[in-house]
Length: 381
Image (cartoon, one colour):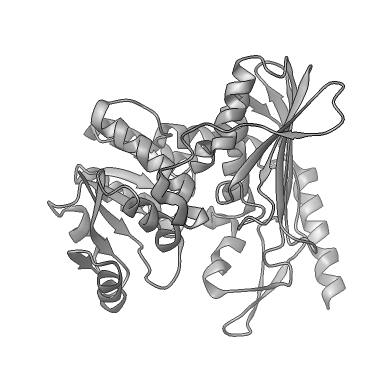
């Protein structure tokens, strides 16, 4: 039994309550939720009562040092990850941290080194690779089922915030120094899946733009300026010579959508959310389907998915919890056997390094973003 303490278990909203807690409760023979920590006494008390845990704290240090906590889950804003995950590692606890691991690659490397030195196991929340559709796609590719992989094309569009009004908690993502913008969140998750399917990647600096430079905070009516690009076009190649392109576009007029197209010499694969699925454009949240078409076929067909889509009792789990539950299944096996089935902080460092390679550094890119921002701002006035 792995005893879990959650830092950032807001009882009202958030990824912990919508995904992690249902996933942990779906695995009662492997995990037990024993402690929670939030930012103040009131929310800690409410979280403890809402989730029925034995211990609720307003100080994260009390949680990470508690003898009834084996695994610390960090689900707060990215700038706090370094301190909180670092405190858990120092206390000798295993750590599962949500993606992005940290604001910078240097910070991520610091945590990975500390975990190795302390001898604790880590996990990073890159859960999309645990979707049955992604797992099946990897099996097909590895077995040569589509021939030589020629290209992987990914398109992510988000209708979220397209009306330029956002909740206050989301405002911090508009500042690139927070490390939680479209590139880090959607770009990071997507690039991890692409490299999971295609192997090592070599990427070029991205073309970027800022389509929505001003936002209104829903609760207060305050208008704030965004400095984080909300559009990215990333290109590169895999180690085997396949071309890779990733497009991330926030604030579209239509519905959110997502797809990964894998083109081979003999067939094509398509990974996309099941029609009507929650999340629409977030491959890590939505249930995914895998479709295939071979040379000469007239229509796409749905591919069979692996048998491990979930336990029978998981039928009532909310969609965001499904891939997380599959992740926890394998992390429990890692902790029990010493295997390495889930991505850890070293894997997080590698994705951070990929993001570093695509961040625009040239003058032309910066001028492009500045010019786009100026044009958009002028048009709104």
